[in-house]
Image 1 (spheres, rainbow, N blue to C red):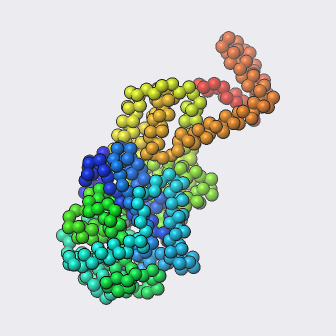
Image 2: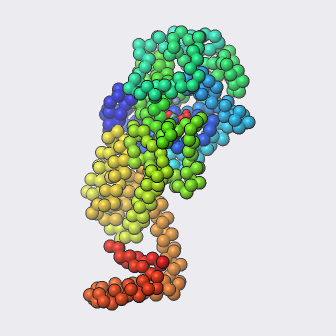
Length: 477
Ligand code: AMP
Ligand code: ZN
């Protein structure tokens, strides 16, 4: 399985630290607002990665934090804590909004069929862990106290900027807002591990520490939560591409300083969802949520399909026109599967099953090429094989794609069957079906004149016949 690794800037063969097992860490949401569909693009693609690893036979343990403290509006060390800003906006406490938006995040994930990670840890529940690691970093000479805050000393590292293939604008994210210099820092790139002094002294949640009452920096939480649950050797770390700098860069700096060796082998970064007017962000610009899409009549799984149709390492432009195309594609897929469910299943052809499964795996083994994975699904529908083989393959691929294909098609078929059952009580419908049967017989008898006459008679009564390979359908105009 090839996976692009941001650290080496190459597609590499994926080899976990322990054979058959994968440890995976995901940066969780900052719960000061709803997740927008850009954030959720990252979580959908990470979900696919996790599910594909499981599908490929790995025993995966996935951990995610919930950022409920310390993420400042600049992503770096300046600005207000986003949680405090959210609480002020809504005139609630930080813990109240954290609970509300954490629940909202998981409700959105459920609608998008994003699996909840094995461990979900809010940062505010791990403060002792952060203090322990910061103390060790001070002891090892990697951190220093200045002006009341504890900073990580980046000059102590051989190399600080590890993800240097990113574009300037991605790196700038970290210093976008509030670019004031912090005179306490020994080096420009140093970052805060623990704040006791901040210009926003109304920080709501504070804890006692060896350096005074304060709160942790954002970066330390992911390092500590990951190491607490997944140990010193991490296989895969995920996040949106804006997290590469400064967040992941700082995570690597402090984690490796703490453990004294390489920490994480593979870095999986999902590129951004943008709108025509630019990057989607929680604090500015267009704010599109799953609920908004639902209120406009879109099934959340249509958005999932929309994401799967593009590669995770390409930025993706959201437009309603593009989403409409995904909605049409989803509807067609479901209709085709519903038609398969109506056919005589037959037996599963194992050779075809294996061949098609290999095509699906080849797509995902190639750096999670989900769009080719979806193509492999279309190829199954076109294949010359039994409906049972096709349905088995669709169910199998959907363990990864999670588009609820069979379930939705089954519901559609049931609804159609129910509508038919109701219609069969109607004398007009019975007459139409009777005439369709007579026309089929006339065609068999090569009495085309009678067949045409029946069609014309029905047309005159507002009934259009539609011939398909599965038989004749009709539409009452
Ligand atoms: P946040 O809640 O701001 O901490 O972000 C949650 C996740 O969404 C992080 O992994 C971000 O990197 C990611 N993210 C933020 N904006 C976007 C976007 N426009 N497209 C895709 N992922 C994003
Ligand atoms: Zn993180």
